[in-house]
Length: 202
Image (cartoon, rainbow, N blue to C red):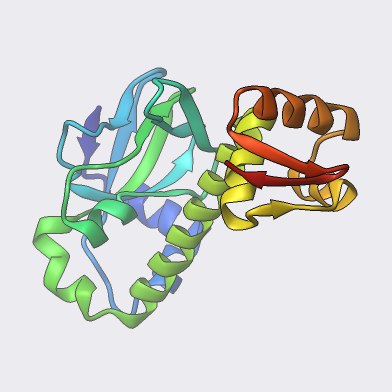
């Protein structure tokens, strides 16, 4: 990674992607350039910049408690990095890694923190960015769950499963898959079958 203080190129990207539209006032942006497969954000390193990806492709992901890598998003332009860390004032919760060479428009958090905290346009933009990441994370977590995990999570919210057809639609699985899992969970004494088509948590 290298920082590049090239005002002409900064202005070119800022104008191309209308980055000024996300702020109430002007800020001292600069460029950051990354090689392919370079780590941009890592949970063990402090994030020092808000970055807008203007060239290249980035994967954002996290590692779950079982050590599985789950993607939040894979994006080209115009993705923002450093938003979560700006809000939490903690080390990152996600990894961000380049899939290609990447160029970003960057802004130092430390040098601009006070102004950014009072910049309503930026804060509104930040809120939308965080909601997008949360939505993508939730969607990908569900997609990566096994049917058994989905059933147990579903029954924690709906303690009685009494409509197999509705459950299939909500869990995005076939009737056969669901019935096979319900039988296994009954055998393992994690749920109880009350009667045909009716199950409750043990």
